[in-house]
Length: 212
Image 1 (cartoon, one colour):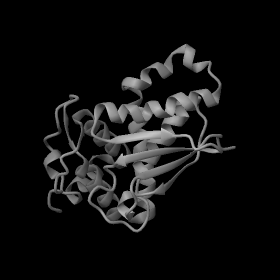
Image 2: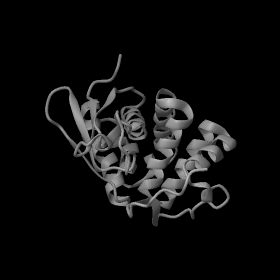
Image 3: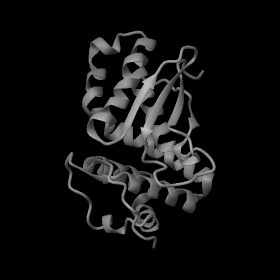
């Protein structure tokens, strides 16, 4: 069993942690969840889940430790697949109901052209995290075929030094949010930079046109 991660002092709401654990359990089963928590040094949460509230109590270091544990247990490729699935389930099961995204289910939003939905909806996803947590992120349109989704204070590689980008949970969240905003279409999301590799931020290239 790993030691408890050194805390960052940066937090998500406790409810995010509950959504995360529910998503992990859906993907891996209860025994798989417990094994990952032990490997990540988070065994204290096995029998004592956090309160279901929006208080900031879920440290960024916990996400980083979970990422590391998934990669160690399943290897880089298997860990990547699980992290992507985890991000998708996180958005679908909980994050779509938060704050700035609620209006995206209104009829006035649904009848907008696709590109107008993306232009309004993608920054709203970043705003959810900025308004409820210590994550800092925003969306930039450099022109051309992609948006840039930029995370300047990132939990996924917090305190880690990695050889390749590791923000697959965020990529999964972005992919699923675009599917939800567009009414079911799939978009390509590639990570361009990673703070764990020494870059200044974690930047994701989000293609404006759906796949296929």
